[in-house]
Figure 1 (cartoon, helix red, strand yellow):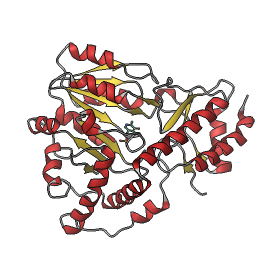
Figure 2 (cartoon, helix red, strand yellow; figure 1 turned 135 degrees about the vertical axis):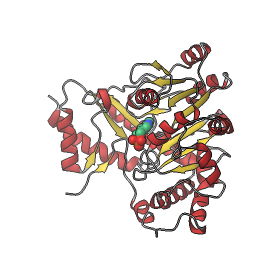
Figure 3 (cartoon, helix red, strand yellow; figure 1 turned 90 degrees about the horizontal axis):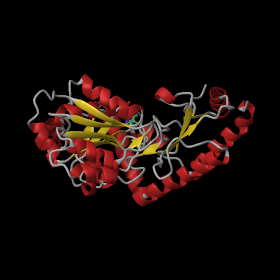
Figure 4 (cartoon, protein in one colour; figure 1 turned 180 degrees about the vertical axis):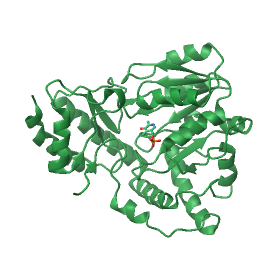
Length: 360
Ligand SMILES: *Cc1c(COP(=O)(O)O)cnc(C)c1O
């Protein structure tokens, strides 16, 4: 049976052109061919991240860098800003790395309050903050600029930002906001298959990393910097993914970033309008809603899993039935990557057709 098209928020649907690009020849990574490939994606990725800093390519999923950032940067104590499955788990990962960690925990779906961050950091003792920009499990888009401005008030505190489901869907200007680490995996907003992640570091972050004991090898920021200077990666990279990344970056630049951001806004507005039209309540409050997905509360009178299954089996589209502790109580629909008004409308057509059968 054909696999369904993914409208779940990650991994997402991958374009045939991307798969085709990934079939390029395997090349030795310590040679001119790879260096050329590596260098070719830099300007485009720097444009998307709005940075003059290098964009490192790392062969792991996002969690590699999420954990690695703590091992490179957290010497005293990390403040984890938690409000969903990914941000909450980061707190657990910090502790499992043996780091001292404290959390600001908000209700799932709610945004992080920059004032609360200021109050907590004012207590002193912190040197790192983690923030999930777009909490993919709840559809909440956190106020990145405001939180970054607060963290910047505290010298010696570095801000690590996860943009897994927002990078290239909304602007995340690294230099302008004064971020210290920006990271993302490629299987969500960038619409590649899973297996590669990207990250940018500030000079401050590199300086801190260079002095950190026990930061290991695979995610060592200093190793990434050193190899970057030769257009290379510390260890053997996922070369097919980098071919695919090159294809996607070219595609994004051809579309134009402002157009790409506008397309996400339009398709997301349609999604929210469709949901509101059915009385589906958004888990995230107005003003803090993701532009790349929607997370909606499951009404009591809906057989959600039956509905999702029928849409998959009868129409070949897959949406998601909630993640983490809100599984079954919410559902999520992605508009990230390559979706357009037309493809979203096709999905809504399928969802609408099946919905009446599963209203109890
Ligand atoms: C999916 C996701 C992750 C985890 O990514 P992996 O690819 O599983 O490592 C982290 N943060 C956010 C916001 C995500 O959506």
